[in-house]
Image (cartoon, rainbow, N blue to C red):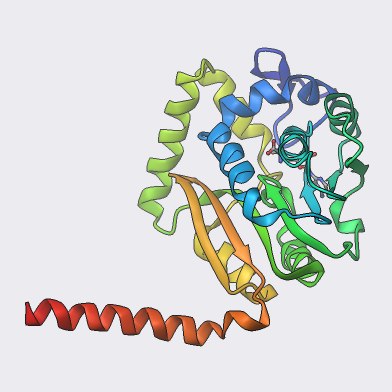
Length: 269
Ligand SMILES: C[S@@+](CC[C@H](N)C(=O)[O-])C[C@H]1O[C@@H](n2cnc3c(N)ncnc32)[C@H](O)[C@@H]1O
């Protein structure tokens, strides 16, 4: 039997075998806050942005809903709206159990499924994937991105949060060490930090920001923005254009025109 090693107070794992099992589910809400910088801020920003994105009758998906933290907060925030439905998709049974215990709202359902088994999503207005794409094998990511895009209503959005790799190898080392320094400040020991990194080998595959943008654009998304960034973590929002949004080309030309006229103004002044 493989030797389990501590990666946090009550969580153990084996190198290359990180799993969202019962032990992790039981302590996830605490562990995630010691593992992901600005986790609380990102959750709050998602809830804030949802005021523009969730209206009566909306369908919202959360892919990799874990203990239901995000959907629980969203359901409370939008409780007074009519016919809004929240669907969590989660491959870990332990996580689904924990989410169902936390969130009793009738508007929320947690489906115990591998997201890749969902070949067609229901028509949706908002899809969240917070720190989940990074656990999917690369060959599946573009397939899933396209399925999400196809299911979104025009004007709908995907909110993606990911651990990212730096574009420059020099920054990659700096960011990894800064992340480890941050984890130490959360009370994790050097040994735990190292064991967690070992347990994630071959399980988590972060991409660069530009590769994430390429995936989004290849699926059809054209309005994409980073709304939160901490060294090697980023939150991105991507919209599906509506017919009356104008073409992405026109938007780019407008930006070019504004910057050119600013440039001219500066020369005159
Ligand atoms: C880092 S956690 C997500 C945290 C959560 N979204 C939050 O913001 O608190 C990643 C979650 O994705 C789930 N997951 C990983 N691969 C999945 C897949 N193929 N289908 C569905 N869920 C998956 C894991 O079980 C885990 O609960």
